[in-house]
Amino acid sequence: MTHIPEMMQQMGQKARAAAAELAFASSDQKRDALLAAAAAVWAQREEIIAANAKDMAYGAEKGLSPAMMDRLMLDEARVGSIVEGLKAVAGQTDPVGEILEEWDRPSGLHIRRVRTPLGVIGVIYESRPNVTADAGALCLKAGNAVILRGGSEGFHSSSALHGCLVAGLKAAGLPEESIQLVPTRERAAVSEMLTMTDYIDVIVPRGGKGLVGLVQREARVPVFAHLEGIVHIYVDAEADPMKALNVILNAKTRRTGICGAAECLLIHKDVMSTIGQGVIKALLDAGVEVRGDEEISTIEGVTPASSSDWGCEYLDMIIAAKTVGSLDEAIAHIREFGSNHTDCILTEDDGAAERFFQRLDSAILMRNASTQFADGGEFGMGAEIGIATGKMHARGPVGAAQLTSFKYLVDGDGTVRG
Image (cartoon, rainbow, N blue to C red; front, side, top):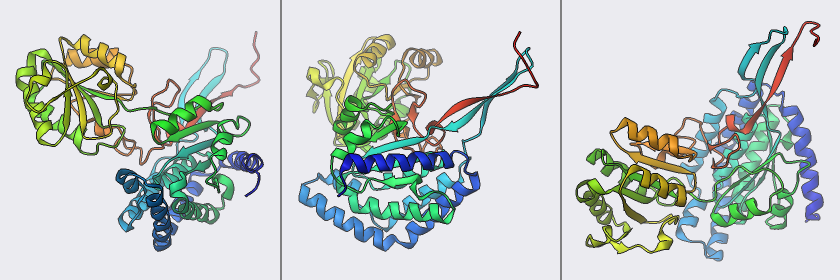
């Protein structure tokens, strides 16, 4: 293997050169590249599944958990989903060149604010091989070059999928270096990416708390990321009982391992003996371990909560539950223990919902809807490269449009300033 800093610098230089061309690539070229990549993935599905078998063996040897092994595994149906994802991104409107605003000035100037690519994006991810395709596709759609660094356990699967993306680029006459995959499992490559300020414009980490924390601590390049999904659902005094039951069960149990899964339930004291009792019992019946405050832990089957349960991301069949005296008490709890990812209010009171929306600053706020909808695909973005909880322009699901910046185009007619 080439000396890693030198190898990464060469990849950075190639990505920067490719990004310069992609900035003015036509919408048709980008669409054609993604459709050709989708066709290549389907045509090579047997080879991709064979490559994935090597990764599954490696993962088993490393002692990965069943949940991680499931994330890693590819079969024909999952390869089909990757193909559909590529086609969905191909079919989206090209964000590059979109006029966001335009106006005239008394001086005679005409000013337009127009979407433009970010440049070069670095994506660092774990386990899921499908991220190779999703991230490559979204970056390309937004006119960006991308350097992908997949998890060591998905090395062969990611390499096989990357080959299909490169085939798509070639078919459409776009630079092959538009989508590069770091060709080593060495951790040193990650450290290099985090400091490549001359070549990489933004880093997107996609993985667990350990990976994201490392990136946020060590990166010298701007980062779009969320550390944890400490998702709260507040059951207001004016909640509808059936909506509350259905939303909470779905938000907790549909898939416990995703960042939009509910982790803490706040119940208004006025409905604790009615809706609250019903919801807690339904969660227990569904096999969820409920860790309750003093009042809730009097319900049979509930485990008393400790202070560490507030602000905990379980990613498991466990939920913390607490009674609150008011909407404002719920808001204060979420401000203290939440992670600015996704929070939900269950209420029929428009005023309460408006106050909840105004006074919390999570990237996604919901009313009477499962937090499992916190997903780029569900938002109509085709796919997402991740969820961002920071204060930069990309917040919530990061799709192709969020992978752009803007520039001002100013037209005059010999106009001079007095």
